[in-house]
Image (cartoon, rainbow over all chains, first blue to last red; front, top):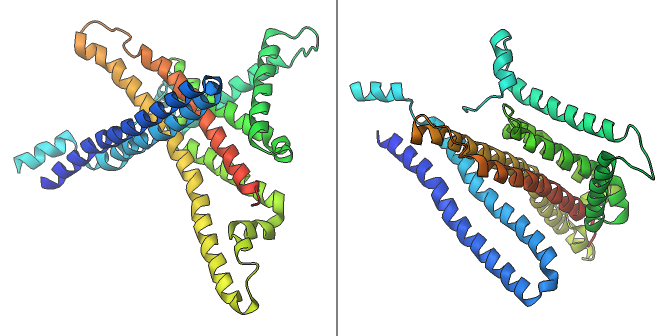
Length: 89
Length: 248
């Protein structure tokens, strides 16, 4: 059962770790963009476009982790029936 | 992988034996049909002085796309690739927004669709480089031949080795690009759909007999993300084309 415990923990920790780091990166990007807009309000348009593209690129890293957790790790977990059989044995 | 199916696929699969990919194919066909009908209606009675509302709106969109491509590419590439990039954007946008219709799923939720789109983008990027400099010129471009062109003659084997090294690194980079494009689009749409599905199921779990549309804000967010991902796919393809056609 240790194997399945490790799989479950891996799937459960993959996304939160990615979210933590990506949230820090997004906060950094937004604070820098706000500073830039405050310094030069007339350049707000291009800065906002670049910011949104950068945010989406950072956010897609989280979704890589989500896909890895859902498509590669989670299917290796046993179904409920298999779990019952393991417990019976 | 377990996945949700569209209403049409579920109804059809009661009577016919359909493979898994038929769902994606049907949805993509519907998207193409929507684009065709809208464009056909808009261009049916073209008028220069009193354009219909649909024609004026589409002209606005087309000129915005042309401006966007013209900002990022040089003139000759912009003229050649504007229609390709614009159709890429419109197609991905319609595919992403298809799930706002009840009973439909976005075909970009399937990895096959996004990989096909990314391969098309990859071929376009490579073709843009070959078209600009010729095949030999493009090989020189990706092997950084300018770095080695001024060294003495007795170092030529070393120079060839260095060029080969750079070429392998650049080729790995080139093949990583469509992969990241495909995974990004797929992961965003899949995550978004999973979130909407979770919040659709949340209300019956919480309140038993009350079905509140708790997923409504996520549908609005879905519209935003669908637009943004189509935009980013196009922007990245444009940037890759401009990298492949620029000589340092």
